[in-house]
Image 1 (cartoon, helix red, strand yellow):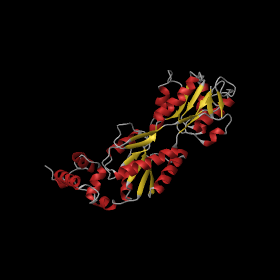
Image 2: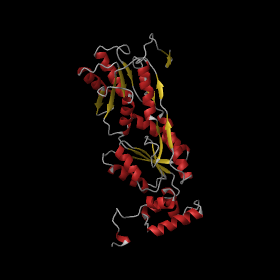
Image 3: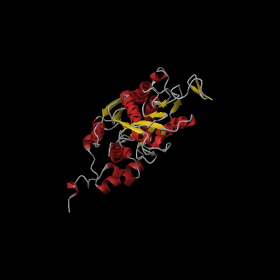
Image 4: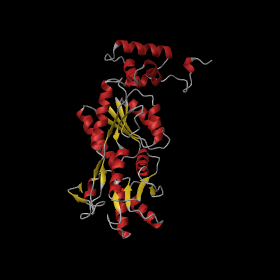
Amino acid sequence: MSRRGRDTPSQRVRMADVAEAAGVSRATVSRVLTRDPAVVEATAAAVREVIERLGYRPNRAAQALMGASRTLGVIFGEPPGRASALLLRGINEAATSAGYTLAVAIATDSDGEDLRRCLNTMVEQSAAAVMVLPATSLNAEVLAAADVPFPIISTTDLGPGSPCSVAALDELGAVDVVMGHLLEIGRSRILHIGARHETLVSRFRWDGWRARVDEADLFETADEWTARAGYEALHRAVARGARPDGVFAATDEMALGAMQAASELGLRIPEDLAVAGFGGLSITEFFGPGLTTVATSLHERGALAVQECVRRLAEPDRPPSYRLVPGELVVRRSTVAANGPHAVLGGALQS
C-alpha cells in the first residue's frame, strides 16, 4: 500500500474533491486556506475538517499568490479576431469600472494542453476570476475538470448543465431567427457556408441551420471565417450544381464574399439569391446591397461576463449561473428587395 505522501497524480486529492465533500465551491476552499475572515466560521471549520480527513495538500505557492486580488483573467481559445477584440473591449471597460485590471492569455492548441497552461498562468498571476472563450468541445471538457482556486466564467454557451458560469450569446436562438427570416421570405434551398465543426460556435451555427432545412448537402465548409472563404464556397456550391436560393453564412465576412461571388455568377441579390450573415459588422450596412445580419451584442456580453465574475467573488458558494444574450436580426436589402412584398425601410422589416 502506498503512503499518502507518495500518491500518484491520479490518486492525489484535489481542491475540487474537498469542495464536493464539504458542499461548498472551490473558491470557498481557497478562501479558507488563505484564512479569509469573510468566510463564516462554521463553514471554515467544516472545510478544515474535510481537508484533514481527505489529506488534501494545497499548492502553497499558488495559495500564497491568492488573496485580495484585483486581477481578472481572460483566456481566448483561438487567436483573437475582430469579434474577440470587441468582446475584450466590453470586458475591459466593465472591469476597469469595477476596479479590476486584466491578464490576457491565448490557448491555440487542439488537445487542451494550452488551456491547462493558461489556467496555471492565471493562478501564478493571482487572478481572482477567469473568463474563458473556449474554441472547442475539448476545451470545454478541460474547464469542467479544472482544479483551480478561482471561479471560471465561459463566454461561449456550454449548456445549462455547465460546471462553470456562462455569460454568452444565445447562438441557437440567433440562428433560428435568421433562418426563420429566410424561410419566411420564401427561400427553400438555403446554403450554409460555415467552418469546421471542431469549434463550438461553428457547431452551434450548423446545428441551428440543420434544424431548419431538409437537405444536409447544402453546406460548404471552409478553413477560415473570411470573405475569401465565403467567395470560394459559393463558387464551389454552384459548380457542383447545388443551386441555392438563399445563403446563411457563419460570419458577415463570409457573407460579403458570397455576395461578390454571386455578382460574378450573374445571380441577382436578393431576387435570385438572398444572403444573410452573422455578427453585426458595422460595415455591412454600406456594401451594396446592405447585408442582412444578426447583431451579437459583443460589448454587452463582455460586461455581463465581468458582472458574473464580481457576483461569484462576492458570493463564492452561489451555484454557477447560465445567462444568454439574444441576437438581434437586422434586415437589409440582401434578403428583401426595396419594392418587393417585404420592403426594407430604415433598417427594419416592413410588410
